[in-house]
Image (tube, rainbow, N blue to C red; front, side):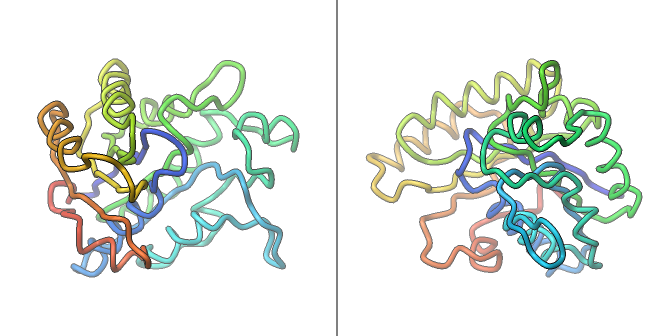
Length: 226
């Protein structure tokens, strides 16, 4: 049976793509078919093939069988700013209907594990009326939360968990990702998070010099998801 999840984070730049790619790698190397969607990506570079996003390319590398880039990242925005602002400035149609339709095209592939990666945190605007969290709600996707381990992470994590629950969605699992190598009392913070977050703990990823999918996957347990 195909398993599908929405990957979000406690903030931007806390390793959602790193964790998502590693989870896909773990599933792929255990013999499962995989797919990913990065519905909207801001901060794309111009290439001979068109606009390309580094995060979306990292996800594409873990899709097995391979998926075309346009399926993985249907909305490409050049400016590395909030997606709704970039979309407005670049004339892109950024709506739940468009993004949901793009995700369904990938879901039709019926892969064993499909991850839909959000942008930024849970409450990211798409336009004047819609939020990206609405995509997970529209598609009825359980959520995987990446907690960026740094000062303030407990508050950010608990507020995000409350928002996910308020939207009526299941928190399928969470990962502690050490984004600040100099964080004070990381073990104590992690213990508090484990006590307060009522969802499967998928792993703790330290600050790595080479945080590729294979290296990160050794710290994660994909079993609760698949």
